[in-house]
Amino acid sequence: MSVILFQRQAMSLVSDTYPFTQSFGPASTRAICVESAEKIFTSLLSKNANTEQKLPFETLAELAAGKDGELLHDKVKALVRLFRPDRKGFLTKLDFVTSIDNVYRELRLYRANLSNSQQIDESFHGLINILHYFVVILVMLIIMGFNNWESLLSMTTFFFSFSFMFGPASSKYFEGILLIFVRRPYDIGDKVAISDPETDTSASGSSTWFVEKVTLYSTTVRFATTNEVATYSNGSLARLRIINAKRSPKAIVYVYNKFGSDVPFRLIQVFKASVENFVKSRPREWAQLNGFRATRVNLEANFIEYVIVLTHRELWQNVGPILQSKADLASFSLEVSKKLNLRYEQPPKPIHLSLDGRHYDQRSVGRDDGSASSGLQQVREMFKKEE
Image (cartoon, rainbow, N blue to C red):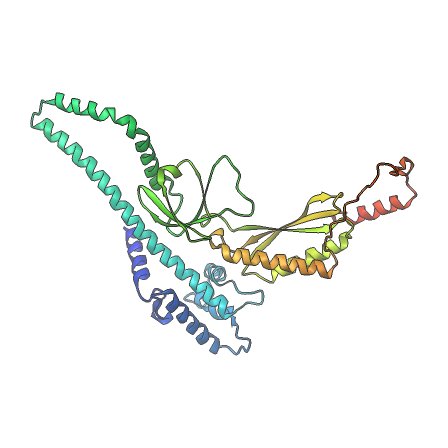
């Protein structure tokens, strides 16, 4: 009963013109919600003596105060996850409005999912009613003493001859029903990627489709890149791998850089420190820097490839900010490599016009004049781990 009451209360909030209470203002559409959020930000900013047009997070933290006036840590953490202030604890107008807009979109998706679930339930009830009435008719015939079962058996043999034609279709039909009611791999508004389970997916992300409509028989999707609309039968999706971008954890991004093999390791450390400071200064974009390591060494082409592994705040469901943040980091890495003179230039390939004249002095191989040993000692000291 409590679940039903909670669902009714949630539906009343979603359908209302004031889903964020009347103090916030109207939010019947997305544009009106943005206007109300801008008014709230201006009103809160006017109460603070801040000339930088930034709202301190302490103002919003007052919402997490309990009855005794003390801040509740759980509510404070929820507010931090929602608004994501910068390292100094301030919010810009764009950050505030974007956070409110994300909540509004979640409310609208929740309403669409409830409406679609209601349609699926009605279709399922129709199937149950057909089976129910069929059983009721058979029971009534038995009670009334119907004995002419030979005619019914002749009809069943007639339909049995067509079962070979409709057998595979019926099997896929029930597979589709199990997909929707048991697996439930997606909801309305989710981004999904369909692929063969026997092949690996791309490390840079998969091409995704928006789920627009789900029925017992089919699923309507829209390609996120070109807005093309397609329809899948649920039975055909039952045996495929369905990647749900919304249900996946936070996106992991890879950015690759090439440096010359003769670049001093000290400059590589300076480059790494610059990337760490870049990531820490953008807490609304990046959750953490997972790693910075060399992945490929090619002495013939005279380069070492490094990869920067990061965790983004957004899910792959919201791929736009992820790609923008990745592009910003790639541009920053390029500019830093220019300043540190780390840019890799591919060496020209040698051209031999004749087969003679190539000499190889084997006496120079393995020769140690003392400088090599001292150089190796410096390398050991450079990579020595502190205990």
